[in-house]
Image (tube, rainbow, N blue to C red; front, top):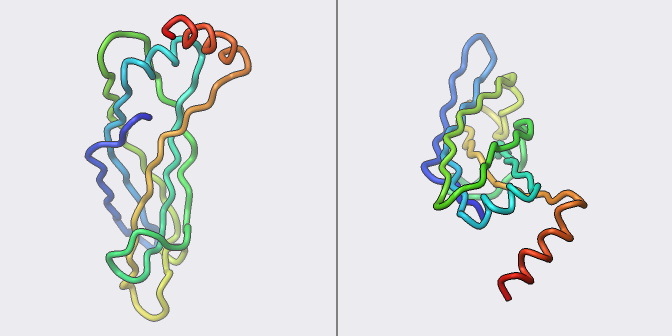
Amino acid sequence: MAEVENPNLSLTTTDGNTTIRVTYEAVFTEFERNLADLGMNFHHHINVIGVDPAGGTEGTTLANFPLTNFAVTAGTGEQRIPRDHSLTVPRSSLQEDTGGDTDEIKCKVRIHAKASRTILPRMYLLIRKYC
């Protein structure tokens, strides 16, 4: 499956609103690039999570970024696609701890593939061809 490399999260608060900025690089293999050429679509899920205790990895989902598709193209070797997404929310929506602004915020980035109905028979032929 596609990889997420060099993820970075930054938060900027101005006038009671916080801009959540997530940057990363999506890396697609040659096989995934060929699947995209057959009609498979890839998009990301970015979830903003309030984490307790500090240093943990799971918690309450506080916000979600809109789904965005990748322009994966056919070709040899891997394809790297840099991504830079921002979402502005009220600072109060990130308040997952009672009292104060010591909230622990993380983002979970996942890349998801979705095949159209027309790709499945073509994928079968592709897999069959290599068996």
